[in-house]
Image 1: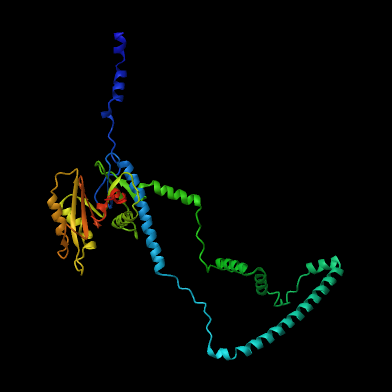
Image 2 (image 1 turned 90 degrees about the vertical axis):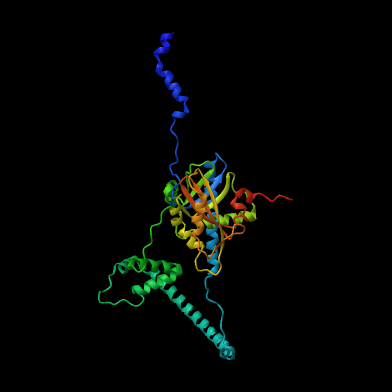
Length: 380
């Protein structure tokens, strides 16, 4: 029995490897958080980062589409199309002779009706006589007339000309046929541009699915922060798209009014317009476009601002130096007010990346906490 146990040492090693989790490779995020991105900084329940990221993308997309639709509707209502007026203008000179003109028109119309009746009667008599003559004729005469070739020197009459034939056919076919003929002729002549080949619905759906499957073409995608309870959603902004600040502000104001529950795992959602590495020089250089956008030097209404700082997984950076670097980059026209600021500059440090954004009414909107905004007010 002892020899049998020693003869198979490999079986024991295989079992040990299956029960040792430290031998398994550690899964790392394929898209880590880096400097130079913009999007949304989100806090969530610990251990629920994956569910919170998927939920955050759906919530942000819904409010993004709502904001874009509102902007398009406002633009359409701002410039209504100008329609020509169908009003009939009457002059004073026409009113005096209107009675006489009506009498003359009645007389003319009666005369025209009588002429039309006479013409119809004569046409019917001619048609009947022509039908009788053709019935009495022989088949040979019909063949001869069909095979007869017109002389070359004989000029066609006005009715036999191709121009008159086209006009008669167009009159019999109606206005729709006229449009089709003219469009076809114009396309053949080259006056109208050729129509672009339209793709089928199946091909369009396949192209859209391929675009959604490619993470590099998505508008909103998840980046791995490497911190517990922290999620970052990157926004690839295109021309005409609203900024992350506009989307988040619209979201918070609408939730404050409706009190609608839109999330299960999300806590706080903040916009990020600039990201850089955690050094004083990099922060001063990266924050310049944000300061120029929200804190102009020449302004009649100076703003009161505050700097809100928070750091995660980074103990080597000095808090006061970062706040001073941000506050000194703001022009001296604007003043610091920590109690009632008009606008707040958010500085969130995650490991070695510094995320900077701007928010309005931070305290009034429950510090941009979705749960507090959507929860009903307690009765006192």
